[in-house]
Amino acid sequence: MQKIAIVDYGMGNLHSVTKAFELVADGRAQVELTADPAVVAAADKVVFPGQGAMPDCMRHLEESGLKAEVLKAAGEKPFFGICVGAQLLFERSEEGPTDSLGVFKGQVVRFPPDRMIDADGNKLKVPHMGWNEMFIKHAHPLWAGIPDGERFYFVHSYHFAPADDVAVIESAYPYRFAAAVARDNIFAIQCHPEKSHRAGLQLLQNFVNWDGKA
Amino acid sequence: MPLAKRIIPCLDVTDGRVVKGVNFVGLRDAGDPVEIAKKYDDQGADELTFLDITASSDNRDLILHVIEAVASQVFIPLTVGGGVRKVEDVRRLLNAGADKVSINTTAVTNPEIVEAAAAKFGSQAIVVAIDAKAVDADNSRWEIFTHGGRKPTGLDAVEWARKMQQLGAGEILLTSMDRDGTKIGFNLPLTRAVSDAVDIPVIASGGVGNLQHLVDGVTQGHASAVLAASIFHFGEYTVRQAKEAMRAAGIEVRL
Image (cartoon, rainbow over all chains, first blue to last red):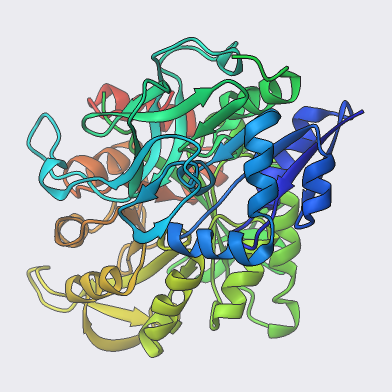
């Protein structure tokens, strides 16, 4: 049976991510929440979540001794980044001076206060919190069965600004931004599929079924 | 199209059961938390909020079991509040499966907890609950009340909301204290004053009796989300009906 490791480096509530993967795996994959680099190394697929401030996440990842194994996994097996876990895959973030993993080229930037105005002139709240639409920019196997424009649950104040053409899903707040990026065996998403009801569970199920080919 | 406005059913929980009262007295049993949570999830609720109103500290841990059970079956955001006094309480609720923890009385008596919890778990996980009511005849000045609305604090609600944002709150749950359980609608001037004063989302709560009240909370109160309990618990309206009413009023919703 395939093994899916959910990387626990001490940042945030991983109960829901684990329960959601267990539900969609439905006995066809062994889902393990782990802080052990050896378990990550032995897994067939790796889920890399993260919550809180990006510099704290990076520090915890380094202190946990999991960084090297996470980087290795991102280089070779089906890999799913969520929220700050996804942000860490970029080179750096405006949230702090720490270098992050640099798997994707580009930065993580804050929603700029001067642009947070909607079409009617109302001020938009930051964090971007709630259900927003997901638009398909490039078709991807993990988005199978999810309609264009489906809503997912977001909560974040920073978003990816990829330097390369890796965005597969975009959302808008108020401008278009990359909500999910993908390349080869990696898929990384800003919002919370584990909190996004049926469509979110569909995405996780697609990852369970995925062969890692874009 | 913009971000959807959220509808959040609220479950008051005591000793592991959902209850609803009027003005914080006269509690009526409304059912099993997991069954109710699943029902709202099916109806399209955007989030769920649990307020633990358990009086006895002996039974406080029951809420952890409730959250664990709900979080294993319902995959939408869960907020839990009530009786949160220490950063350790926040940690335990998040570990049980809550996505956000709401801090109320303790934020007033010890504002540093908001700062410490936001630094530790991220602002996205920290909601500050503000219970406020008008302290003047023309409903233009509002004060914070604690201990279920019984204890005045002398703190101005709008100023307090700003301060909580500065300390790291990710969201404000604003209850119109003089409206709670009355079914006459939110205190709209209060809701609007607080929503306009902060950059973080504000959830309007307290006093919802019909679907127009939910609409008003967004269009007139400028709330990012609206919270209601009894109109859903006793089957007067479904969450879906509430969303249809909001959409008919031109509000963006997830349907």
